Image (cartoon, rainbow, N blue to C red; front, side):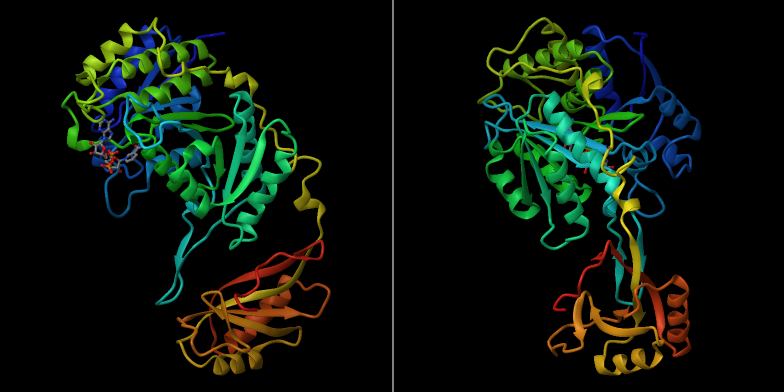
Length: 486
Ligand code: NAD
């Protein structure tokens, strides 16, 4: 196999210190790779590049396909999009893998038995960043969950479990409330799980799931979930394992992958030679496995475990009762290098499978011959028209809507913040200036042209239309949610 070239960004704050440490360790361990360096982050923002990256660096990242990235400082405030989110989405890095393990008794934690891997969907959900202010009082953020996006992440979770000899995959969703979006995630999870009878599959509502994880993480093995829950739950998992400073993460796509620590650039301790390089080091071992060098990954990981076991700790994890020496970043690096031929005595040694060769995340449910969204019959049955209307008597709005409706449609109901307020609303329901008005038809099917006619009639009656959502049935099944109380 030819020597791979990886892209490296030294980042901001403590980034350069921990990146130097990590590259020293993996090079001494025998990593076979060339390095292409690029600048990202603060330096570029200061030059006025709002993306935090030069266009030419994108070519480097795309050419090399594997990116080891130190943390960067994101300027606060307007006009700057998160470079991390841009990288993940532009490169199609759909899976965020974050192993969270405790190293008790060497690093203090309330959960000595914890060994959990969070598999977070990385591109969809509310992270599309599609937001609008619609009225004076109401703002919205769109939550998009797709069939192929969900199938990919769920398959990835099961493949990860199989390849890494894990026994169980738990799915976290909130499908008791979001029956369509989270319902799809849960449903595909159950369908894909049938292809992995050797792995136990369970589903939990995310709130109780997160509570159980925080209380008894030893019950969990691999957990897969949509983006927003994953963002929150993976930080909780890393924190309760002992320290957010110890966890690395892998962002995996079909063509590219990016590896990073989960912590930020820690500007408060930058340049002091006291930062803990462990998070980025754990990311680098995942990278080594990804580029087909799992034995080197094990060598580095085991030397690191031995260093932790020996009580050689940077200030962030040092405590006089369990550590033997408080060391600088440089001294920590030297210790790991010194232990490269050692294994830990008490902690379980690391084992890395050759992930790159074994994973198979081919989509069979959402793409290819069986693609259900193409097979099923889609019929347009009505439209939700969102209008701006000062909070007031629903009967008045109903009268205007009914008068403005065209002959093909009837006003089924309207809601305010999702709760039905007409017909048969109750006075106690709090209303804003944002009304969702549902028009249905008795016809078998209608066309977009019919909807445009309805809208034009509503507009002619001075209704202030914010947006519309078409109401479909797929194979005769309603594909939109009911109003709360409908
Ligand atoms: P942070 O993770 O940088 O720091 C939080 C605290 O943890 C600080 O006290 C810091 O000193 C400490 N800490 C973090 N990493 C450490 C390490 N390796 N060794 C020792 N101590 C460590 O979070 P923050 O202060 O909220 O963010 C600082 C900057 O980092 C912000 O600009 C933020 O946007 C950015 N950030 C970047 C990334 C990334 O690039 N992936 C991730 C998170 C935050």
